[in-house]
Structure formats: structure tokens, C-alpha cells
Image (cartoon, rainbow, N blue to C red):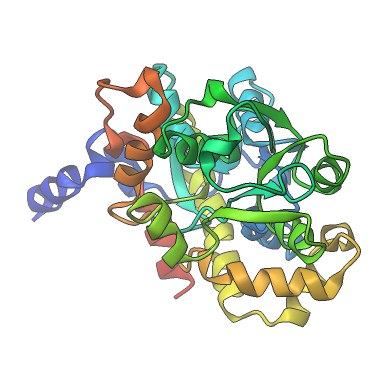
Length: 342
């Protein structure tokens, strides 16, 4: 019986490299830790905020500090530099980092659709007709190298343009992004809600590519596209399985809460600053992206392949390079957490 169980565990893609993950349990080895995030106010990272605001991390015996950066690329830099233990960021980074021989892995998924929108400024580009018109233009992204820049690069590549054909300008994920469009600082923008919905309300942008719903995501990427997740170096997971499980527990609990939460529950829980001065618009934006939130924290089977295919479209460093997708994520912790909060 014991041999049969071990054989089954070792056959699982996420367990091949790290069989110890299947047995993660017990108290957190590291109770104080830092989770870096880029654009915490975005719905993209709402599960993280819910887990923090409702005390789910504390319930798991964790003291979590969450510094907020201008974009996902900056949060990743904090992890690489050693000032963060974990990142709440885009799954795509796990693939890029494997290609650089710096293995990191996702262990709980927050979003099953990227929620990123590419739009052009109605002020700067009133005569916009196609993606080709973006050549030579300035595109505002949360931060260069972030998931917003990746999404824009992918859309450009599909239209025959290179990332070098445009200029990516970091504008953040809040009021700074809105100001960049209003002032004419950028010709187009790749950002998320509630920023995008607020720009749409004032007719400041024209949407050209949208991934806020599962249907639109399928249309843009040709498959399921994983979005925000918690990721960390593989060594951290190996050395701290109890801490990793505690983090997954808190996040899956937050995901379950969001599946049942009403509009009033949301606005009572998030900080007032997240509403950007318009509660009604914030809630309208939330309803638009609600289905993009993962219901269980599990990585969809075809998701990693979609992400790799997307990155290989414009990332020269990934073209022809072998990537073991099974080492970029594990569902073991999310499965246990899902069972706990079933």
C-alpha cells in the first residue's frame, strides 16, 4: 500500500521535482514574512487584500507585511533581492525565472483570467484604426516588465509589431495611471480595474483588447490564462512547507469568501482608498471581473501551457528553450486548503 501511494504521488507533475510538498503539514516554520505585491488596490489582487483585512493570515499563525510596489516586476525584484519572502504576482514570472535558472513556483492561484485591458487614448489617438497605429507610441503600463507590459507585448506581436516598436512607460495602478491618460502623457494604456472602468466612464479610452472575462481571455490567448498567484523560490517551499500551507489556507479561504460576498461586503472590507472616490463605479467594475477570480486556488491544467505559448510569442529568451512547466507550480497546497474550507 505504501509503495502504491508513493508511486502515485511521484507520478503527479507538480510532485516529481518536489515530492515533499505532498506531505506539507504542521505549524508554520516561519511566522513572520513579507509578501510583495505590485498594485494592491487592483481587483487582480483582491483575494490578498481580503485575506489580510479579514485576519485570515493571523488565523493561520502568520504575521504578514505586504509592501506595495508600482508593478509586478518591482515586486519580483524585491523577492530576488531578498527583501520579500513571497510575491503576490503574475504566474508568467515563474516561467521567465526558470529560463534564467532562478526557480520560483506558484502555490495558490488568485485569478483565472488576467483582467488586463489594452486601450488607446481617445485624446491622443482619435483616429485609431488598428494595432499597427501604435507603432512609435507611448504605452502606459503598471511597470516595465510587469504582466501589463507582457499582455501589451503579446497583442503587439500578434499584429506584427515588436515591443521595441513602442515605448513602455510605468504609470502604476491607481490615480497615477488615470492622470497619465488624462494629461496625454501616454497614447495607450495596459492596466486593470478599477482604473480601466474609471477611464471608460469619462470616455478617455477606447478598448482594443480585453481579458476581464473568461470568454474574452479565451479570445485573446486561445486558452485559459492563469493570472495572479502567490509564488516564491522553490527552496522556500521545500524549507517551509507548513508556512506555505498556511498561506494557501488563508488565500483559499479568501477566495471562498469572495464567491459568496455581496457588494456591501466588498466595500466594507477593502480600504476606502481602493474605491478611488467612486463607490458605485468600483462595484460596477467588480461585477465585470468577478468571474476572473479563482474559486479554489487551483491552477487549471491547460493554463501553464497557454502562458508559455504567450511568452514565446515575444520573449526571445524563451524561444526554443526547454521549460518544465511542472516545476513552475504546485496544486498540492491549494488542494489541501480547498478540502479544509469545502
